[in-house]
Image (cartoon, rainbow, N blue to C red; front, side, top):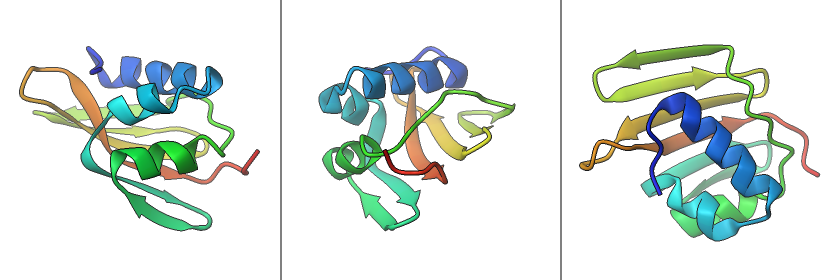
Length: 102
């Protein structure tokens, strides 16, 4: 699953986390996606989805910067880097989360 914009990607991620849908979370990340959070760093869709599911996540972008096929989305507790996939959709490459675990 890919989003039509970096902003939509944020909303889809929040929705997948609220629904506890690890498969949907994983599908929003590019292959080799990275999650950095308080306890460390993990790489790979399934590992990222598992660890991110333990976070309180709110899609609240304060700033979205898009240059060509790369976007940086900054929120109160997150910095997400996404890129366009070959089909033109957006996927997360890296997520930095400072939220408190649930």
